[in-house]
Image (cartoon, rainbow, N blue to C red; front, side, top):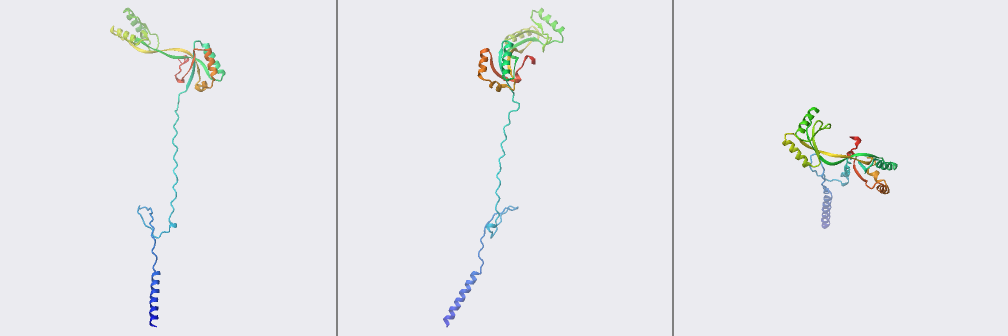
Amino acid sequence: MRWIFILLAVANLGLFAWFLSNDRPAAARVTPVIAAEEGGGISLVTEADPAALPVPEPQPKRERSPAPERSTRAGAEALCTLVGPFAEAYQGEDVARRLQALQINAAMREIEMQGQMRYWVYLAPLNSSQEAFRKLRELQAAGIDSYVIPKGSLENGISFGIFSEKDRAETLTNELQDRGFAAQFREEPQTYLERWVVLAAGEGAAGAASLAEDFWDQLQLDYPDIGRRQNLCSEIRTAQAE
């Protein structure tokens, strides 16, 4: 009887200890979460449910702005095609008519061409023609060949001649200055006129290229001395423009 009482007491103590151990709350699992706040600090949120955590929204992809296109060169100068030169006007007119028959805008023109540089020895213009002729008589009395310039930028000046060689112009200028005359010289570009058929700016290289090579071959047979070239339309100076 005594042993039965002791066994029951031990069993009761064990059962009491088991109940005590089950009544303790389970240790909470701590999940560190970094949250951005206005203060810039870091806070730990305990016992956070992963399903309740905010899902960061995907950042939209930045679209690259298209690179600026290179601006085309504004005001590009037009090219004109020239055919020639022609010794006679009727030859150029004949070629122009052939081109016009092929719907090419072309016309024969007399174009000012750049020639050899010349050097003009002169006295600066005087106040009137009377003074100019008085100076002329003085120069002729001294045996100096000269004449009065009747018009142009040197009107009422005295000319001593135009030379193709710069050395000759400089030598004469120095001789006249040594004799007491205020002579000087300047460069004078020599120009002359040639007859060319000009394809209008709208035609240009495209118009010339649209013609079959047979056309140019036949033209070369009819006029062996002519050729083709291109030039800036703005630089073509015709006799009518003068």
